[in-house]
Image (cartoon, rainbow, N blue to C red; front, side):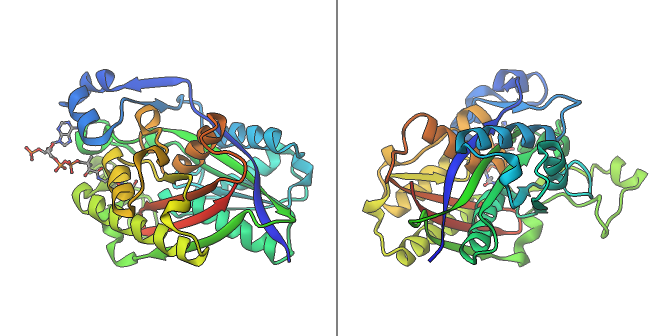
Length: 325
Ligand code: UT7
């Protein structure tokens, strides 16, 4: 049997911090409202000259260093992003070139906030099938470029950042079970309407702000709690584990109320839930990757611990992974 395991994680956050107080100067909002409704205190914003691949590269280098493997030993690079540098080539191709990972195949995936969990599951398939040995997965976003900074309903929620992991062939199982779900019929609840082949870029689409993210927050909120609760339960069942076996739950970081409601529905005590949404807001595909990295750095996850990664986002797409660290 061949098994897949995360052997190193990394992250990169842009230097610029945008606080809730800073947002108060831009839209009709307040620090109190944002903290009470979302748990977010500040978020990072990439520099004008910083593209998604610049964030992704730094997170990837960090993960390779922690995994103690060379870029030349990578067989595959997957970048999960909804804000790629360009429509094509893929952001993963840019990373392959900049890392000098000459023998690595590379592609991007589009699964929004579930992107990192989906990439992990894809990496697992390539490794356990015997095709590849070392896969670098990166969740990276420059969401600040698709945000309407005059819309208080959305601009307070998101931030930029990147997280990465090296997934490698191992003797013992590291990824115990996975679950993936989706409902494309609800895709319009969270989307960027223009800039693709359905509504190509034009003067009109720009005038109508159709290149910015649109979200029906209330609907998404309820669906997120339900889907992440369900995904975690299904993945645990597959791994033949119970809620009480969880040492650390890392959900997508979209809203502290969603995270805590999911934990409550699972019957999990709050000390088992890792959150860093206060510092970074929602960084879509990067959220779980950055949180995993920080949970390891802060020793919230210890060797042998059971970790559940639980994602939900645009698509709609959701999924969970049970990991033995
Ligand atoms: O990454 C993918 C997943 N994304 C998510 O999971 C996000 C899910 N949704 C949410 O997190 C929440 O629905 C929001 C944070 C977006 C909104 O929180 P809410 O408690 O659902 O508030 P609401 O939309 O029901 O709005 C309540 C009030 C409204 O005013 P009225 O109509 O009651 O007078 C809003 O206009 O709050 C108002 N409001 C704000 N007030 C101050 C909305 N945004 C703001 C704001 N500052 N930034």
